[in-house]
Image 1 (cartoon, one colour):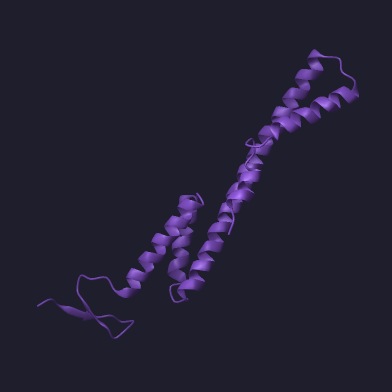
Image 2 (spheres, helix red, strand yellow):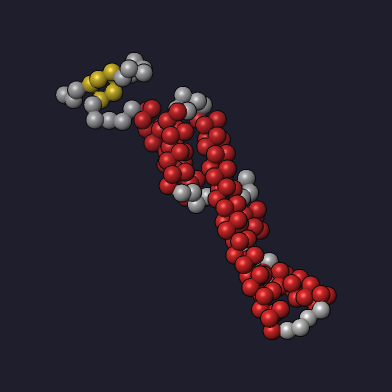
Length: 142
């Protein structure tokens, strides 16, 4: 006959070696949060924050907690995208400066011609697929 213990949070009798419904509920929420973190390509520290959020909010309504986790994960996704855009814009700035110095050192262009070359260079750099900006706004649909 297996041993039984009572849990402190409820008066249910739970067989030893089995998972309580609260632990099962938390593990399901953590699994769901892991799927959300994978979908939004979150970093390990950000996923850890979601897990801590689940532990802190374990007494909240499940729907409410899931919405809060989703919102936090979405915030992390947007912040990660903004960091990528910032890094990419530095690279674009360097590319434009390199093109500008290369043109000025090799050609004698008027101010209008230089302006046109810079406009065309920026247009080429900002073409679809060259930046994460558009993808960030298309991918994050709620």
